[in-house]
Image (cartoon, rainbow, N blue to C red):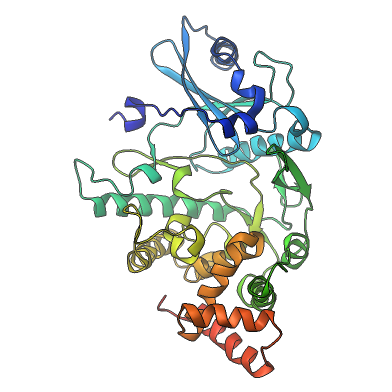
Length: 424
C-alpha cells in the first residue's frame, strides 16, 4: 500500500527568517545535491543511477531537509544542519553531528526500532555541497501530526489512533533493553554502558544564527539540573515559579531508587513519529542532540502530543480545531499507558508512566523559562483545586517572600498527592 507521503511530498516556501537562519545553505544547488546523492547511492548499493532530481527542500527547525529521487523508484534524504555555515560551523557542532549518527546506528544495531539508515555523513565542507550533511534513508508514511485529526478512508479516526498508540508502545518498549550510568550522548555505535560523550544543545545567537554548545557528561540528575537550571528573576511570578521548582524537583524528577539512565528520541512528538495508512510505525525520525535521560522522563513517558494540556503556553484548546480537550488527552493517555503496560509486562519503567505527564511538565519548566510560569500555575491549581487567579496569586506570594512555612507544607503535600493520584 502506498503512503500519503509517497503520493505527495512536502515543500515549504523559504522566508526571510529562513535566510537569516540558514544563510548560504539555502543556495546549495539541486545539481550538487543530486551529485552527492548519486555518489552515496553508488558507494552503498554498488550501482549507478541513471537520473536524479531534487523533489523537496524543506526548512525544518534546525536542518534543511532535501529529498532526492534517483531513477524512478529510490529516494534518499540529505539533511544539512543550520550550524553548517559561518560561526555555527565549530568543532562542537561536528561532534554533535557525529553523536547523532552514532546514536542512530547504535539503535539500529542493537534493536529492531525503526530508525532511518545512515548511508553517509560529513562534518566538513569538503564535499559536493560544500557543507556538513547526513545522508539517510527515506522513511515512507506520514508524521502523526498530519493524520491524528484526519478521518481515514478505511477505518474510524479512533481505530487509527488506537493502532498508532498500540504500535508506538511496542516500539518504545524496545528501549528498555539498555541503560547507561551517566547523562550524556552516544559517541560510537560500539558504545558501552559507560562510554558517553558530553550532552549537546542548541544555542541561538543574538544575530539569529545557531550554534551547538556542550556540557557534561553528568553522573547524577542533581548535577545535570544544577548545570542547566536557570533562575527567572524578571518579576515576582518568575521568581515564584523558580522557587516552586526548586521545592518540587526533588519530589517529581529525581528517582532516589535509581541512578542509571535510559535512551529515548530527543523530541518524542507527533511530527517525528512516522506511520502508514493503518497506523503502523514506519520510523522515528529527528535524532539531533539525542542523549540519555533519567528514567522518570525516559522511554516510558507519554508521547508529547498526549501531554499538551500540561504545557499551557503551547496548548491552544479550545481556540484551535485540531487540538484535543483535556478530557480527551487524559483518555488517550490511559489507552497508551495500557498498551505500554502490555508491551513491558507491567514491569520496570512502566511504573513511571502514570505520572510522566506531570514529570515532563516539571522537566520542561526547569529547562525553559518562557514556559515556566504557566506550567507552575497549573501545577499549583491542580494541587490545590484553585482557579487561575489562585495559581498566579500563589506564585506572586512565593516570589514576594510572602509564603509562610505552613503554606509551603500545604502546597508540598498537594504536589505529592497530585503525583500519586490515579485520576489525572
